[in-house]
Image (tube, rainbow, N blue to C red; front, side):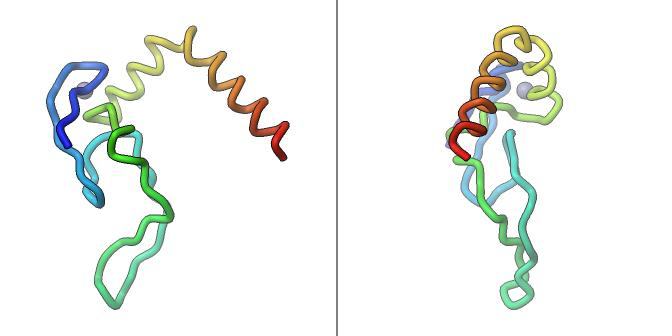
Length: 82
Ligand SMILES: [Zn+2]
């Protein structure tokens, strides 16, 4: 899937099981039988909207005034669903 980085406009390509694009999720385990890493879950490829970690960090910094209230709302929702 073709993506354009939200921060720097660079074009990059993501597919399931490749390690391009951010955000990423790294927790998982190694499957010795098939000699590959099995992640616990994967960020849906359409949600990998940054080409590099630095672009994600820069974007979070740039829009923190807008994003922080959203993050806090998500946290409140999470707490009230427990
Ligand atoms: Zn970028």
